[in-house]
Image: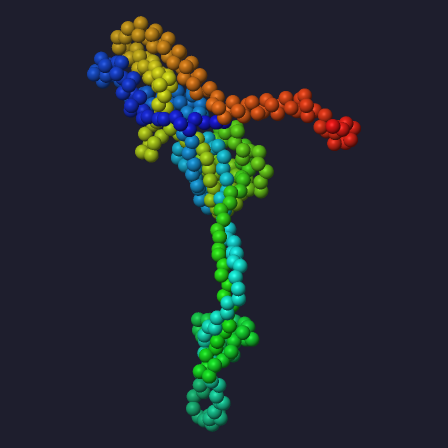
Length: 336
């Protein structure tokens, strides 16, 4: 379904002010209750259909296979799983080698002869042996408590040399490279849910290993963590939670006469004196305004007409011209 992205909106208070201007007498007597008319505006919006709802988008972060949908979520248009990866690429270049000092080697001395042991003294406390996994290489110095890694020369001793000062110098080849980060979108196959998914949602037909479904205002996914992009039709509310209605010259009359109809009905139910001609006039104008508003909303736009024309041409092609294509593949009929 194609939605109207150029439609403007106004608040319910502005709509009520325009509708109440025709009932100045009742307005001065404070006989118009705004709380009774909010549900009327919501009903008219629902009657006009999804075309008048605002198209919104959001990126949700999934934890433990689920995420809470936005508060203004109404119907899902489509959704995608967001991902990223990095690729490191080496640039064309020559050979560049540098000498780096990676450590120093302590001189080795011959151990002194053992001292005589006096058996009358208290035996010395044994030293706890070092964990083999933390024991550095013999060329890397003494063992450390923090399990520091061995010198780089231990892994490749042929790349290192010693100078007269006892410094270990390693020959390192420097390669210039660049790291690029790519973002990708993966399709999600949604389990059908008529109430919260648009009938034209492509996620209902995509074949993908990633699946999801909507239940009780939550989005449940087959993967535990990640980001999900959703495009949806949101309720007509602004950032402060105020009710919004479409602002169109023809659609406005439908909303206004719907409110006027309920105002007159409330006055009659409260035993207020109302001219019956007013009720008859409003009922007549209400039906005409509703028909005009539905005509404006349901009129297909250019993209819909173009898609309909293309579908019709493809149907005619399959029916009258391409009907023998299956026989031509087998060699029964050849085209010249």
